Image 1 (cartoon, rainbow, N blue to C red):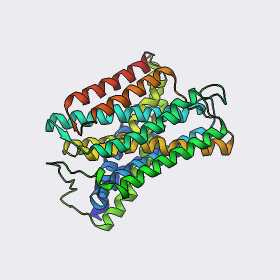
Image 2: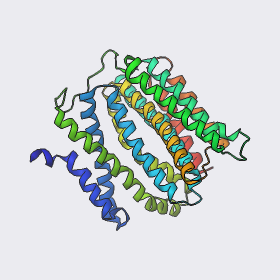
Image 3: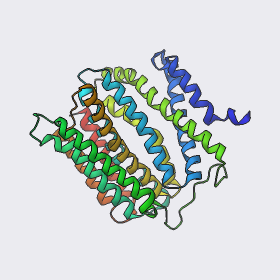
Image 4: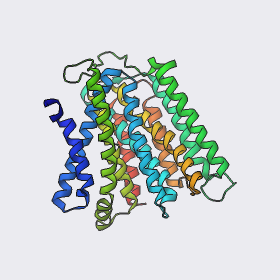
Length: 359
C-alpha cells in the first residue's frame, strides 16, 4: 500500500482530477493550486524517466522520454487542427519552431551553463552531436525554410505532392537516426567521459521489472496531463499576456516552454551530475522527434481531411533559427564545453523572446 502512496504516483493522478474538474479555469487560488500540481506532474515525469533509464540504459531512456512527450504533443496539435480556424494553418509550424528554438537555446544553453558552473569544463562525444545535428538541420531546412522558395503553390506552402515527399523525407531521416542511435553506432551516444557519474535512483542501479513497468505507465500519465493542463491554461495565459499589452504570439512560446519542462528538467539534472552526454542526447533527440514526428503526422491529417498547412517561416524567424543552429554547431564542435557557450545560447534565447514581444 505504501508503494501507491508515493508522491510520484499521487501527484499525476491528482493533476488529472484537477484537469477534469476544470480547475485551470477556476478562481485564482484554484489556478495556483493547479499550477503547483502541473509542476508536480513534471517532477513525477522526470523521476519516472530516470527509473526507466536506470533499467534500460542509454540511449534508450532518453529516447523514450523524448518520443513519449512528442507523441502526446502531436496528438494535441492534430486535435487543435481538427477544430479548424485560421490559426490551424500555422499551428504545426509555430509549435515546431517554438519547440526547436527553446530546445536549442534554452535547454542546451542552461545545461551547458549549469554544468560548466559546477564542473568547469564538460566533455561529450562529438560523433553523437554531429549525427543529431546533420539530421536536424536537413529536416529543419526541408520543412521550415524550403517552402518559401518553391513555386508550385504561391506563398510559404507546399503542394500536395511536395508535402507527401517531405513527410517521407522526415520519417526516413528520423528513422535512420534512431537506427544509428540504438543499433549501428550506439556507442556514440554513451557517456564515456572521465568523471561521469552513473545515474542512480534511490540507491538502485537496476530497478525491478515491476517498478519499471509502473514507472512507464505513470510516465505516460504524467506527460499527458502536463500537455493537457498546459493547453487548459492557455486562455488564462493569453488573457494575462493581452492584459500586459504583449503580443499573443508570446502565448505559444509560453505553452511550449511548459510542455518541454519534463525534458528540460531531466536534461539539466543530468548536466549537474556531470553527464552532459545524456543532456545532449535528450535535447537533440527531443528536437528531432518534435519535428520528425510532428510534420509527417500533420501532413497525413491535412491530406486526409483536406486541410491547408503553412510551413514556411518568415524572414526574421529564419534568421533566428539559423543563428541558433550555427551557434549550437560551433559550441558543440570540439567535444568540450565551457560557460561562454551557455551564455551565448541564452542570449540567443532572450533575443528570440524579445523579438516576439517587440517584433
